Amino acid sequence: MLPDFLYAVTNEAPVYGDVTNNKPRNLVNKIQMGTYVTIKSELGDFYQVVTAGPNGWMNKKDLGSTMGLKIFYLDVGMGDAALIEVGNLRILIDGGPARNMHSYLSRWQYTYLIYKGQPVHIDYVFVSHFDADHFKGLVSLINDQRFSFGTIYHAGILKFADRSNPHNSGLGKVVKRDNIKYLTSLFNNLLKTGTTDIFNRDISDFLDAVAAAHAEGRLKSTKRLSAGDVPVKKIIESKNFKIDILAPFTEKIGGRHCFVYWSNEGKTINGHSLVLRISFGDRTFLFGGDLNAHSERYLLEKYGNTNPFLSDVAKSCHHGSSDFTEEFMQQVNPFATVISSGDNDSYSHPRADAIGCAGKYGRGIRPLVFSTELARSFSKSGILFGMINLRSNGTAVYINQMKETKRPQDMWDAYALP
Image (cartoon, rainbow, N blue to C red; front, side, top):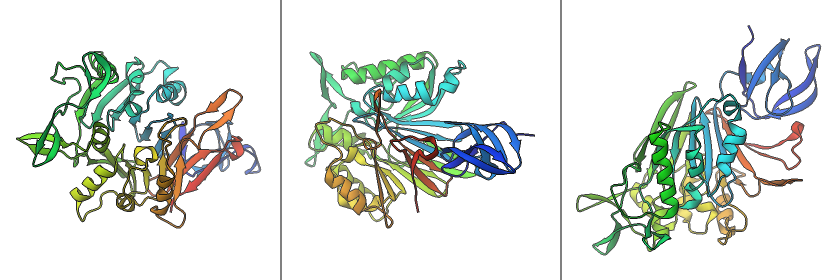
């Protein structure tokens, strides 16, 4: 009996136009590891398939029953957003500053469900921190009735507004102990903030969307995470899948959990980003939000002689800012770094020293550095937003981006990690 569907188990798996005498002819397409294919018929060592791009015939050895791990580093302009699919789980890490992620999910990635009238369920949403370029794009998605959500995880720092100016922001009350400043305004449940103070307009829009989705039964819960938490731990395709939270840390002041306050509001909210280390099988992937030099030194001190940051692939902290430490980069020591940034930003991210150090402190003979900006291309309709595609079966890791020519037979600029 023919299987209904399978997945590509090799990267850049070839799709052929026809098969003669059990030999393939006329290469028409190449698909990434983990790509879903529908099986139509069988001929010798080949299956006739329907898949992304031109359909055709695939060798059975290139197909299997396991999807593996997919990480989509989305180009959302000047911001961060990633989609993760593994097993039956769908996970978002940040959402960018605008509607790019929402548009991608609703107009491309999950149209196969939306066209059937089926809801799209996102199991976990991780908001690294509440700067607009990381969370504002989630508002339209959460408000979309076609989507439902499990838990929204966050770091616990929100932005307040001046009552006369909703565009103003502040992080809340700061106290001083032993000549060190601490932020005491910390939030656990976004559905019950426990304050009548006015939040920044973007925060208010986000909280309103969260409350509405919860009231409509489309959102289960929200929760603050801190170092040591393990929000996800499952066996998927006979492999361990886990998300470890490496930061932020809180300090106890007067019996209350507080955050160290570093120099200004920006350094503080960025420095206390959620830091996620994702494991699948033998491979590891780091997401560090907008960590800066203050917080990196703080985390290195917290972990002392241990190094939980070593990862195979790292999302560059703070879009390739110059505000980093070489010591932290040395500990991460990835085979590949992915930088998420946009054009026309006043910070000129990614900075030249960040790109250089990403290579210098990368692992292997040829460390890889990817950029969502460089993954863009052009068509008659204008700019096509790029994407960095990661695929892993728990042992092998491939990172692919589309070539600008986008010929199906030779579409992918693909790299295998050591």
